[in-house]
Amino acid sequence: MKSWRVGSISMGAALVFLGVFLLLTQVFHWNTATALMAWWPILLMILGIEILLSLYFSKQDKPIVKYDVLSIFFIGIIGMCGIALTIFSSTGILNKVTYAMAAETKILDLPKYNQTVDNNIKRVVLETTNQPVIIESTKETAISTFGTYKAEIVENNPTIKEVKDYIMVEEKGDTVYLKLKDGPNQHGFFSDETESSMTILIPENLRLEVKGKYNSITLKVRDLSNNWFINGVSDTDIQVLGKPNLMLEAHQTGQLSGDGWIEKKEKGNNNDIVESNGKLTFGEGTHHIVITQAEVVSVTHLP
Image 1 (cartoon, rainbow, N blue to C red):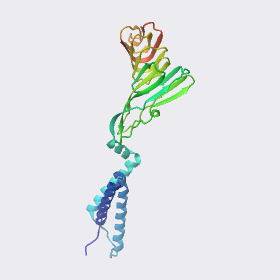
Image 2 (image 1 turned 45 degrees about the vertical axis):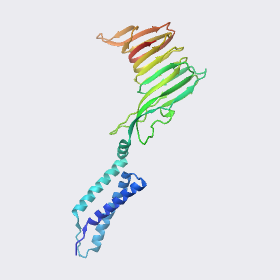
Image 3 (image 1 turned 180 degrees about the vertical axis):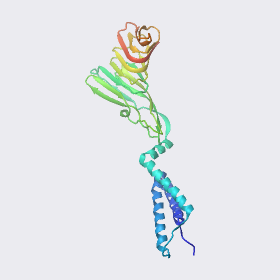
Image 4 (image 1 turned 135 degrees about the horizontal axis):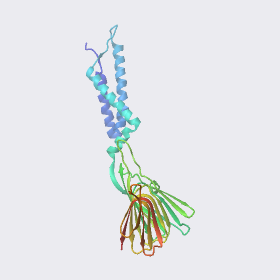
């Protein structure tokens, strides 16, 4: 009679169960990784049952279990792969790998924001992120935002769906507070950072205060009837349109670029230029744009 080698039946059953699970994943559209994690413990149960049956049906007084070494080897490999999948799943690595494999980079539109302001609103306070922002004056009596963002998208599911996903708006007294939010970011082996390009329209009659995060800001200014204050940005590109009555003031800046600056440079102990201060006037200079703690301030006058 042929001897029973433990492992042969388990290997055969493992292949049968594997085929069944793979077939079911195709029919019911199951997640393949989830199906494999559910399948491999059954393999260990079959191997354990086979060992017990081998001992039970052995007719020897001192039964000796004989193993099919090749089958046991492959069962061990499959078991270790299953344990690895379980560990990756519990630590979140498997989800990140699945996300990275399915994601595609897309540029999508930001949800548009538009808020009409009444005569009670006198001031806008804007707090930015580290993304570039374009701020433009407008004759309209509404604060508006629009733009695009670049992100990793899975199954055409946008990461920014509503206005509240990228901007917080709060109205208190005579002030509207706008706080921009960072987009969804992933860190680690599969890092992904949401990049945005946003334009904000501010009524020209409102006072504006911008608190930057050392990001770049572009100001497009026509006729202002109030003052703007910009603080804590890296590069400030000011585009002056037409013939406004405007005075630009730069304080504690690293470099001033453009013609017409009345500049004063502060030097350190070694006569190195520490910071630059300057003024630039258009027309009568009735209203001011004051920029403090910026690395570079550049001005372009467009007709």
